[in-house]
Length: 139
Image (cartoon, helix red, strand yellow):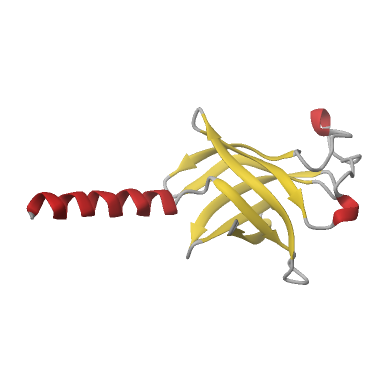
């Protein structure tokens, strides 16, 4: 009985740890309308978090190029575009990376954390910031 209890406890810890990961597919929500805009897939490699747009809900924008994006992202398709770069884990947050707004081409410092099962994504310059809430994709 004790072994069964230990096994159940380890499984719950593993499930809880997986559920608390920022990696995976997240649906971005429009601040004004509350409607889904895109799906961003966050992945971790070598201790760094990055994210790409993998789907756009607006069909007419799916082939759009990021003509305002800087550097290596200039004129790349928005679907497939890496918008989150070089995030490093710091406690329960991911920091020190950047996030790109493909509509304006502006790059912001970024901070990401989980709160109540939702992902909080903050882009900021100095003391000015905007925080979006992304929800885990349900597919």
